Amino acid sequence: MLFIIFATMKSSRLHTEPVRRLDAGFYRREDVVQIARDLLGKYLVTHFEAGRTVGRIVETEAYRGPDDRASHAWNYRFTNRTRFMFEAGGLAYIYLCYGIHHLFNVVTGPEGMPHVVLIRALEPMENLPLMMQRRGLETIAPRLTAGPGALSRALGLSTQYTGTDLLSEHSPIWLEDRDDFIPETEILTGPRVGIDYAGADALLPWRFRIRNSGWTSR
Image (tube, rainbow, N blue to C red; front, side, top):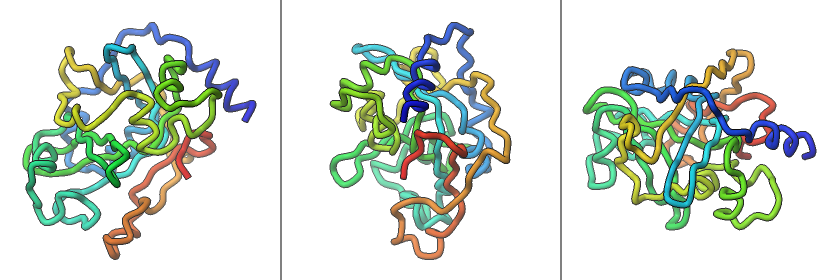
């Protein structure tokens, strides 16, 4: 725990390099599984009225649209909620889980291909006091941003922002590349979480985590 706190305090210094937002070419590739891997080490940024918060992505899950029974858009299911999944990659897709947790996803692929990547865990990097306030925590602990519901609350993300354009320079939500390269040997792969209803698709190894990160979800 002491190592985690020290690492977080060290990494929470403000980033002063030029902003390099992920562009349309990153999001609109067809291979959502590869994109889920590539998002490890990228940075999720929110800048709302309360302030700016930043987290480094350490865990993701891929959901491959029409042929993945775990996806909201399985078999091209088109509803008012899933309609953003069918847009060209680069949008936020945020939905409510169990009526409590707001889960943040990024839409990927070309228009009409309803793929998304769920961001499951972050390493908090900037404005930890605001994140802790939002989470009701008095001390730094992995539960601050380990888990998709926890990270959304810490960064101020909710369903009101579903459909937000992550590519716009005026967007309050975006993802950045800060040259944190994650070698293949440092990526753990396994089945996704909480999707037993998906049958055989629940066993697909589409969950990716950074090895030895103290911030991944259980």
